Length: 341
Ligand code: MN
Ligand code: MN
Image (cartoon, rainbow, N blue to C red):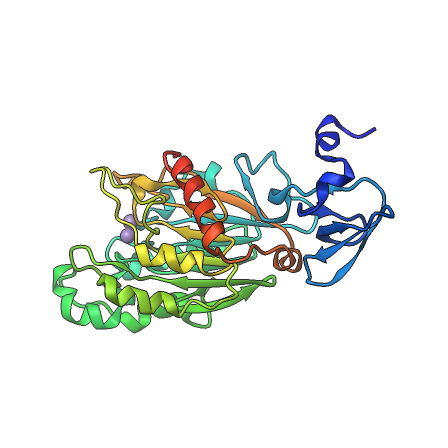
C-alpha cells in the first residue's frame, strides 16, 4: 500500500492538467490536456511532447528535483546518485579551531571566501592543509575582502595597512592555484564538478576600502559575466535582502546580485561575508550564507550541507529564470522566509 503521504499527492486525473507530475519510467512532465479517451498529452521536462499513461500519476515533489538541505548530515544519507555539498565561509585563519564534529563528509566542499584575516601566507598555507585533509573529493574556493594578498593591484597600494613588509602575492596565491593546490580556486570563473556548473566571484559592495570592493555601478557589469547556465553561484557577499542583515540592523547585500541570480537558472547561491547572516533561506533558489565564524570571529557555526540530484536530472528540472509572475511569487516567499536564521 502507498503511504498516506503519497496517496495525498495522487490526485484525480482531471485535476492534473497544468501540474507537474512524475511519469513512471519516463520523466517529470506537465499534462496540457485530457484527450477525453483516458489519455493525456503534454510536455515533458526535456521539452519533448508525448502522451501520458492512464494510471494515477503522482504530483511531483519539487524539492525532490531541486535540493535537500541536510540538518543532520551524519544521520541523513544521500539519495542514490545525489551529490552532497558542504559549505564553509569566513573561516578567517581559524581552521585548526573548527570543531571536529563540524568536519562532515561530502562530495564537494565549497568555501565562499575570507579564509584569512588579512591574506597572511601562513593562514593560506593552513587553509591549504585543512582542505587537503578534508573528507571531500572536490573543493572549490573563492576569496573575500579579507584575503587581501589575492587582490594584487589592491595589495600593491594598501599593503602597509596590514603588514610590516609586503607578502609575496604570487607565492601566496600559488598555494591555491599552483600544481599542488588541494582545490579549485575561482575568480570570476566557472568550473564543472560532477556535471554541475559552478561559478565563483570574490567581489562585494565597497566597505572601508578592503580587497575586491566595488561601487554598485561597477558590480552590475561583474555579475553580467555570470554565465546563463550556472547551477551553483558562489560570491563572497550575499544578495540584498537575504542573509545580509548586519548586527546594526542594516542590509549590506548587493541589489544587482539578486537581480543577476533571478535572471539565471541558479539552483544554489552560496555566500558568507555578513557573519550574522549565517543560515539558509529557500525560495525558488536555495540561498546559503555559510559564515563559519560568528560576529565575534569564533569558528563555531556548522557547515551548511545540501544535496543535489544528479546534474542531468537537475538540468532537466531546472527552473525557468523568473519572469514577471515567477518573480513576484519568489519575492513574496522571500519576505516570508527572511526572518529565518
Ligand atoms: Mn568575514
Ligand atoms: Mn568578508
